[in-house]
Image 1 (cartoon, rainbow, N blue to C red):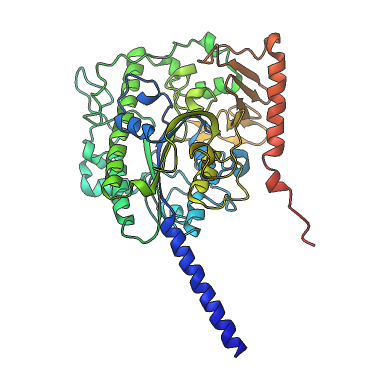
Image 2: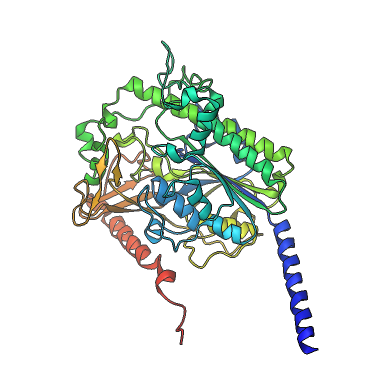
Length: 512
């Protein structure tokens, strides 16, 4: 009789727990994270750029917590993305180099959400290794369509789709077909077959499929653009034909020679360094970059419209973010990898109607803070391994989340020059020799509202007064007037490196 009673109690208790879990899932919001690749903070009209056309992103910003001072912890794809999705610094998750695997002990955001009852899906670029859909699914996604671009077409769902839908374009879908007086980076592929269009369409298809589920969803929509190369389809290719976009200061061998040696090695690894690009070509690169941003803006607008038509706007957290920026020739660099603001300062907007207070927030935040903020917003426990600080309470008007701890500074780190081996580069890391002749290429950055300090092991320092030198042109690290700042920031970097991994290294108590 006692056993029967215990069995009935356990069954009743289990049913109650299942009902509570189902109720929690019904109350939890959906999450849509839209990520652009290599999008600069200043390439949105709402952020002060009066030449670029981004009406849908501007409208989203008006409805969102627009984090005006968000900085990534690595200005390169893989380390940055893994930081967003683990809440951990690059030196902690250890995925420091593109096309290398993440430590199997690391748990990504999608796996935690899946365990919490979310239906998880992705579309587009993951940048995991191996770069396959199957590996993406193993990371915690239930569904997915992959397109990592670059040299990964053999695993790309977009490429397979293109071969089926328009095989005449598949052989060389990066080719351009400019006409006289037109954008030389005009893509030969019509808009309907372009990778940006495919990513948007697949995102909207996934949204409609998720509506039929009885679970909240987490959908990661990841565009490969505006990452170079710069080819872009019509009608976007001609959108900025008449625009006179301000170009960065022309660099010379003399000015580049003043940069720290690791940055010089980054610049001169290219077969055609940025300072050798003629001004007309660079102008067209800018126009094409802007065009790619406007094309993404268009797709984001259609996706948000679909979300509204499905009746999901009020119950869905929408995030728009970038993994890092792009120098576009500033400091003699094309792409990213160094710590100047154009690469580490990124757009980040979070919309959650009725819960997040729309405003332009000036607080310093890191990409490490992203996971804990989202988890606070949905009422999910923040992982013990998390290294970020939630700002959910800040953007919810004090109604949601843990106590907000304001940052006085943000950190970043990167391998400079980066490890890269492709058809044009051979820059491996060799133990004892480093990368490209830089024996210790792991550089560190600290940035406050006014100052930026960068430390290169064995290759000097950089200090910039951002208030008086926002373009970071005059390195004052060697100026005796600023010795106090250099010492203070060096000490702060040391403190960060000592304390960031405390929860990884100090056990809470004896197991005895």
